[in-house]
Image (tube, rainbow over all chains, first blue to last red; front, top):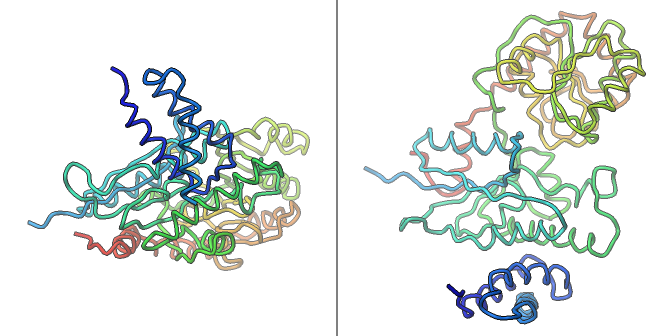
Length: 66
Length: 353
């Protein structure tokens, strides 16, 4: 069964926002990348190349949360 | 019949290892249950392979929704150790057992591996942000000692109240005659200064020492004992089950507590409940909240000669040891789980059933 892309987008947005709340900044690129890789691991079957997209979503959410 | 309050204890797990903090949260949960509280322990492991793992663990705690479980509300969360207090709950009480000290008071010492690199600086800033977030939103913050409360104020600007509790085997410690050995108990880590009691032996020719514990310093310490010529007077006990530990406490002459800047440390309380005085140092931190020089033990500068002088005195003055041990026993006997649980539940606005 493929994961629902909408659910994964929500995970990226919400967890990105929580990272921002915990003090992570959009410029902490290595950490955002590591986090996006974790979500991308779930998403591999939903998108051919989910990493870049999820990374952008998480970074944007972390920036907004500050 | 009134429904018992539901309380979750939030704690950090170190897989495949059971230390003082793990035993403590289990005991806290059991003591809540024993008083009719519907309590359970929730743990998430903190596995540190890189700096981001600290943030990842805080994220895991922050992402949990524990407001309601199984269709019934959770009345309160008692969070304990970094980063479990990042958990969100409208009725959160924090009892700080461990902060991430390498980012604070241990930074810049050999006991912290944080460097001046950009990533390490950001990690320390993020740890402080996590602490501030998790603690400032709590209904009340307790610390397990005055020493920890002072650190929270200094480094995080957070006010907290010291809340003590009895040591893990409370109810089973027993007094016994003063034997022919000093006892040290604890992990053989550098920051615990396990070399100090060994070096002190070189200045007290009648004293013997039993060392309970294991850790990265073990081989170095054994070498040191040989170099100092005291190895014949040292017995190493890497692992001690509860009964062995109780026996060794009850038969000791006194107990030596050598770490610098300890949070609290159970060892002084365990020694007192076994009727034994404690020898510690002026920079010990938490132990000094209980060990008073000339009242319940000896407090000396952190130098081998000073500890050695105290050991010589302990081997010459049995009568003094008895008086110190009696007062220590009285002090430690004042601590009770009833008081501790009462304070935590009252802070959460809940009644003990």
